[in-house]
Image (cartoon, rainbow, N blue to C red; front, side):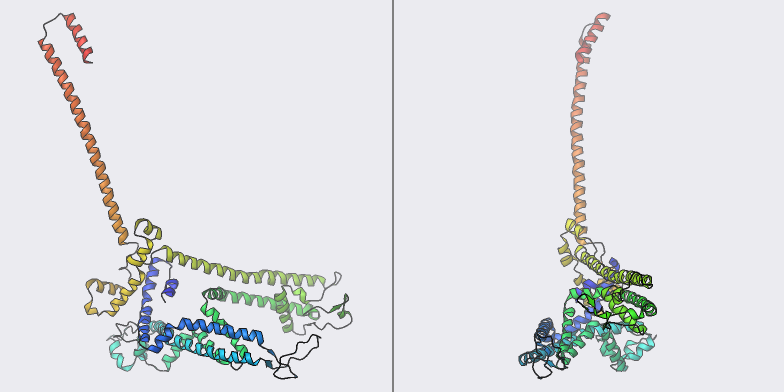
Length: 537
């Protein structure tokens, strides 16, 4: 059930995906309650636990039955009943008759395996009705209940529950909400009358697997009257193989488009049949005449394979049989000589059939099927990429979680496990409203309104913690850089102060020397100042 939900949930966009997921939790919750009831009974618990094994054994039994039929079943000798049909090497045409022959040993084995198969199919059908059918019936009734007007819905309720489930305004409580229904299932609240049974059966008949399970059982019974009917049981391979189901889906997925294209082909075949009826009525044949020693027997005798169009139905059937099967309607017409006056019409007729029916319409049909295969494969690949490449809840990509967080697998299994969210919703419905905490009441209120605002989308605590760590590290890095710059400036300032002090001391020393020296002539003083300047430099 989990895998089915995972692959079939609406993935058009992240919000729609979550909305559809939480809408379907009601069905899963019902399934949990139902399986819990089944597990309380030893017989039903055994049926549910061994269902897959019995399906496998049943399929093996079907193959054994049909291998026996394939190897030993045949016509009986019309002259000697209960004996096999004679192998005629002389080519004598012996009538086949209408009776069949099966060796005694094969008959015994067929009956034994037929009984085993009947027992297995009966148990599989019972398991399906007990385990799966109630959920499908509930789904059908829930869809119908949403479309009903309150007055009509009230008529389906049992009398003892009307006052409990109908308010003063005439509105009916959602009986499919287990808590609002007072811990009762929908079938405990509705009238179990003919209307309930009729619509419940209708809800099952629209499910192909439900119809097949019933036919599977009926064919197992019919095979005892005609063993060849057991061949139909081989369709069980499609019920158990997902690959074969995809093949069948590729043919039926565009069923309406295929049927309309086939209808168009039949219309064109009808037009060609009318044209052939008017112009080549006496020239149609199922096969060419017999030829012996290079000469056609039809030169002297009537061709026994002729199919003269004495009516349009014959022409239509020949067009369908020969034209589609061989791809050329010319195969169904007598050959014409080049000087024959009907030769141009024959060429136009056969060429038009080849272009319209064989080349265009048949290739359109094949193209639709092939494109459907491609479309289904693309849808499956997109779904698989979304499952393995994004968190279902947060919609964060795998690469980002692997790069920045604790890893994708850890995130979807521990941090944001989608099934934990479903269990939380189930927990809120199981818990009494009077015992809810503030956050639980808030979440339940949003859930009942189909509001997913409480779900963390595009957010994850592990990434937010990582971002906080990154921010702290960036702040520390910047702070360290500022400290380094400050220290460097302090070192430069100390060095500059030392240079200034040295220059200041030198200037003071020079001033002291000038004050203590005797007066000189102007020329000498100038010379001395020049020399002092040079020494200073």
